[in-house]
Length: 457
Ligand code: ADP
Ligand code: MG
Image (cartoon, rainbow, N blue to C red; front, top):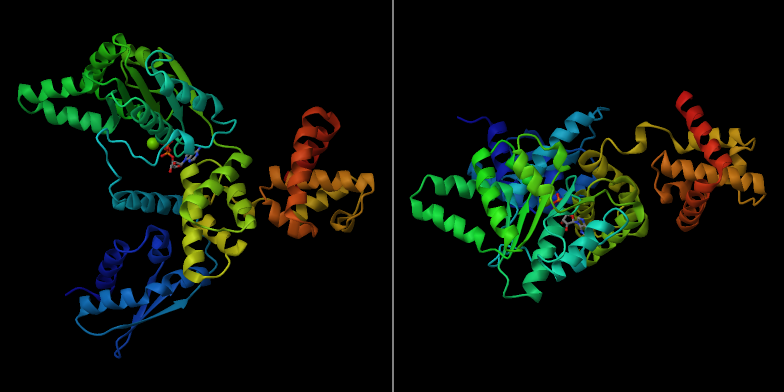
């Protein structure tokens, strides 16, 4: 017979398949504590914040467990903070990986249309900043003149930076404005699997495969790094490429790194990939992250306070998908609890789920940053926190703010609270100093020297 622990794990898995992804994390953190003779099952969760999210689902948990045990069970969830054990980054990353992959598995089938494009990815809802300006411009040009301007085009960049969004945005634009064009979107993985399945079938299947791709006016292939080591698929693609290229069909690829870094791709195919225009997507800057966050909130009908948006955008820097994840979950928490989300809640979520290695909690405190900076400029910490506008105090304060944002990765709200100032004035000072520092060598030197002192502290 199964131990109750096994039964609980089964129930938990069942529940995980039936709850919104936004509460997946707190659900996974639910631990079995005990079950008593009166049929009361006690579970624990690590924080009040998580408790507020999962308690809404107690009836669902009760039903699932009652059914599994064939008796009526009542559920009680208690908050039990983990005993001082902060997860290691590695553990957290691994956790994140499993969660990410499972949420991927459960992702509902995306709305498919004949070309396989997901309608939600559009050029006009792609927010472009300095990080993506060139790629975005090329995407717009080729969408308006498919095949006759830049061709082929390769978009490369790290995970979650908008490659698929841009690629499908191109396809959707062309379909809407040029309905006679045959647009084919596929991932390198699907293309490979499709090819493998036809080679084992009769000759007709293979001919149909070739025909299908060769009739594309627009061929969009996502994640071509997947073609590494797949020699026969590469060979097939090479021939398709040549034919489409000669016919001036538009060909766009995406890759998670520059082509030069791809291994095990035949040279002749590599040359084809790089023949045209290569553009990259870099992680967005703070202002672009805020613009993206605002757009996602609007789309999702989520209203997070400016402080929380600032906090998220300060910490989630390298992956727009994570930025979306943070907004979705905190938005769901807001809806479920009906209470404002506090910075501590947001921190807890981000730390354990999205960017453990980026949060500043382990580097310098605000107190250290402002004390060392005050010392450097011969003023006191009290001066720093005061509203004095004396020029030497102002400069010290401004440099402190710059360092707290840039090096300490503190959000403008946190700095504002520390200095008794509004976060907009922190934002203003930071932007002002960011441009000044470009031209003022003495400021640059001060920041460098203070950073060294902080490191030595
Ligand atoms: P990649 O293919 O590079 O891994 P995706 O295109 O899947 O990344 O993007 C991840 C998520 O982030 C998607 O939901 C996408 O809509 C969103 N996203 C990425 N970049 C932007 C942007 N610049 N503007 C709006 N949404 C974006
Ligand atoms: Mg992608």
